[in-house]
Amino acid sequence: MHYLRFLPIFLLVFLFTALTPAQAQGSGNVVVVDADGIVSPGMAAYFARVIAEAEAQQASAVVIELDTPGGLIDSTNEIIKTFRSSSVPIIVYVGPAGAQAGSAGAIITLAGHASAMAPETAIGAASPINGNGADIEGTLYKKIVEFMSAEVRSLTENRSAEAQELAVQMISDAKAVTANEAFAAGLIDLLANDRADLLQQMDGREVLVNGEAVVLKTADVGVVSADMRPLERFQMLLASNTELIGLLLSIGGIAIMIELRAPGGYLAGAIGVIMLGMAFYGMGQNPPNYFGLGLIMVAFILYILETRTPTFGVLTLTGTIALIGGLVLLFDTENAPSFVRISLLSAVGITFPIAVTFGMLAVAMAKMQRLKPQTGKAAMIGVGGEVRKTFKPYGNRYRGTVFAKGELWTAESADPLPSGLPITIDAIDGFTVRVKENVE
Image (tube, helix red, strand yellow):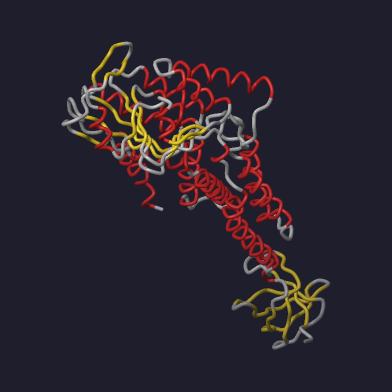
């Protein structure tokens, strides 16, 4: 369609908007980051951008308002590096009330130069688990726990012995504590009811930034929010909603298959490319299980084969089972936390409308194959007509003229047929039809 030529322009406008640098924050301001979601590459990139901009603008501090159930270990390590190498003080605030710094979020909280929690919040439960939520066994578990324990000991070496012990217990025993318990143990610096209370209490405190003592200036200064760019919001959305990735992957794959099945329309192909592009981008936030991805591809192929060679639903049923299994396994990996996996119920919900659509399409294709041809030579077989010119001997047969389907045809028959006699076409040879008397 002609308007599809403008698609690249629309994509360029989106990318320009998504990648345009934010406005300068201003020297001496406190920059606030809203971190609500799963710890993922998108969150790590968001933190890195905001902190780099805060350093360039000589902000007085960056406040990370954190609420996360946890996430990827690799992304957590990237965030720790970003925090600890920052020349601007990083304050991690677990809030508002009801928020949590679970699993990876607990380690991120400890990585800040200063930390605080709102009332009715929790922190901890940072023991490593595998992709299906089960405990890791044996030597591998011991290695991971030892490494993570050493990391949190390093992050809390300037805190009390009780705080260090609690931090290690969060790793080794999956211990979780309330804000009051964390404060009493010295794991965090203070309790704050809200952002304003946090900034007031943090003002004048001394923290170590790259080994140097820095006095925080957080009161009576400008406070600016570092909003996410559209691309960063999209990253976080995909990281927190793997069902959306599964849906994009399914719709995109089906659209591509439709384009390959009936090329020329371009719309299905364009939609498929965009959907698959977003899905694969999302899989960069949560690394996929390639066996699950392979099952999804097999499902697409089976659906298309059903439309080409209908098997009374056998291929559609097999494809449906493969698609459900593929979606359930898509994010079932060792490095991904269990809460990012697509549930069986969600997989069925994504698959059902696709299976119904292809099932209906297969039925329609089967009916079309059983229809009598409407054009070409085959369409003439069985057509009735009338003799217009009496048949006369022609070699070992008889030849005359018949009227059928609105046209006059040269016709041959094994019998002499008189004018006006109803006939039926038996066969066609070039421009000559072979007929017989219609005895019905």
